[in-house]
Image (tube, rainbow, N blue to C red; front, side, top):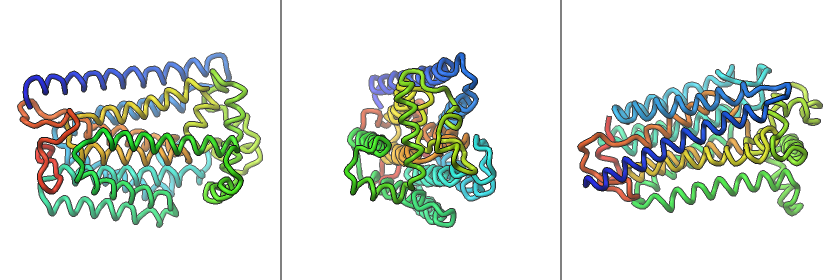
Length: 361
C-alpha cells in the first residue's frame, strides 16, 4: 500500500475507534440518565456494553497477530456454548431455569460461530483448511435444529451462503449498504406488527411464526414507549409494567425485541443509540481486510441484529461479547509493511479463490 493510502487507512481506523468509544460511552451515560430517580438501575445494560468493548478489543489485538486462529477459536467456542445453552446460559439476566430467551441466545451464538468460521475460511491460504472451516460453518447451521431453532438454522445457513457470495465481490460498499437496509426493514416490520398497521392477512401470517404472545409483548413495549417517549420507563422495568408479563407464568420479563425494549425502557434516544451501535459495527468493517472477510462478518452481525429484533439474544453477555469478538478481527489493521490495499473498498491481496492472502495466522 502506498504511504498516502496507508495513512488514510490509519486515519479511518482511528476515526472508527473514536466513534465506537463515543457511541458506547453515550449508551452507558444514557442508561444512567434513564434510570436516575427511579427504582431501577442499569445493571443489565452496562455489562453488555463492557462485553462488546472487551470482545472487540480482544478480537482486534488477537486478530492482528493470529487472525485465522482467533476466528477459528471463536467459532468453536461459540458453537460449544450454543450447544450447552439448553442447560443454562452464562451471563443470563433471566431468573428462570428455562427462559424463553435461551433459544434465541443459542441461535445467536450459532450465527456468530458460523460467521467466525467463514471469516477464518475467507482468510486462510490453504484450500483444505478453507474447506474444513466452511464445513464447520455448515455443521454449525445443522446443529440449530437440534436446539429447536429454525431461525438459527436459517440465519447460520444464510451467513454461509453470503460468505460464499462475498468471495466473488470486490466492492464492499454495496454489500454493507444492503446489510444495513435489511436490518432496517426487519426492525420496521417488527414495529409495524406492534403498532398493528399491517394488512390483516399479512398480520395473521406473521403472527403465526412470531406467536401471539410475542406480539402482545411488543404491543406492551410500544404502548409504554408512547407514554414515556424521551426517557422511557427505566432499564429493567418492562417486567413490572407489562400486563402480558404479569399474566405469564415463568416469563423472563423481556419484550423479545431489542429495539422495542430500548424504546420502552430508554425512550427514543435509546433506540437511536442502539442503531448507532450497530452502525458503528458496520462502519469499522470498512477496514484494510478483504471484501470477503468484511462482508462475511457483516452478514453475521446483520443476522444477529435480525435475531435481536425478534428475540431476546442481546440479554445474554456471551452474545454481546461474541459480536465484539467477531467485529474485532474483521476490522484489525494489517501489519506495518504489508504492501496491499483494501481500505478503499477494493481488494489488493486476494487470490483467485477469494482467499485473503495476507490475513493469515
